[in-house]
Amino acid sequence: MKVQCVICERIDELPDDLPLAKKLRNRPIHTYMCKECHDRIEEKTNKRLATGKFISYKSSRLIENEF
Image (cartoon, rainbow, N blue to C red; front, side, top):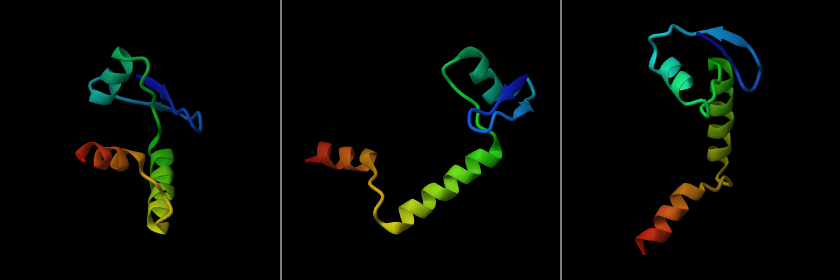
């Protein structure tokens, strides 16, 4: 299955039997991101988390619901 990265528009080939390929085929709303773009975003997110100025809204919602 040919897939295109949503960020860098690189075209990759995925084996048809991978769970990711099945997810992309059956649910068109899901998008593909290549490994390099995924790693770059993960690295930048971890740097932002390390600064202490990054606000995670998911964790604050969980805390609000506990009270």
